[in-house]
Image 1 (cartoon, one colour):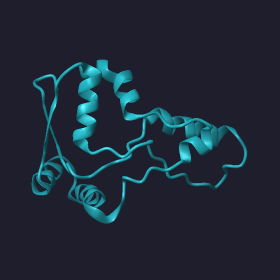
Image 2 (cartoon, rainbow, N blue to C red):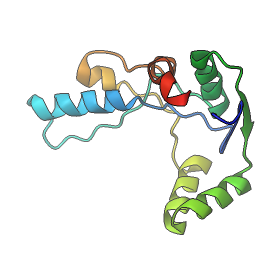
Image 3 (cartoon, rainbow, N blue to C red):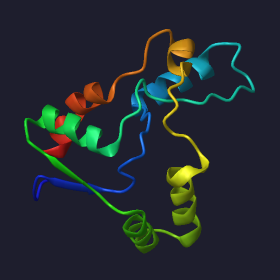
Image 4 (cartoon, one colour):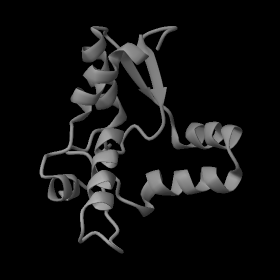
Length: 133
């Protein structure tokens, strides 16, 4: 992003209910500090499922820039993943985003555990915009 306004990313048609790491920490803090969470496993998500192009548009708004999204083909994504990580890990990532798991599911867990709704991607982008400048 520092070099230009075109953001390339894999899996352009895959919506993901991305979660703010601060919400992960908030759930963990409640689970670790209050009784009743022993042995429980929580599936977490953000409050909305967004495709990568939608995430780029939101980030562009937070930065005050007109960013453009270009989706990579699945084959190009495979090549990039295999170039940067072990084949087993790359194949697991590909499996997640090409069909075996549904990362678009919005879950109520953050609010159920913490008593407040999870932050949106737009809120996260506004909070962390300086990191992208």
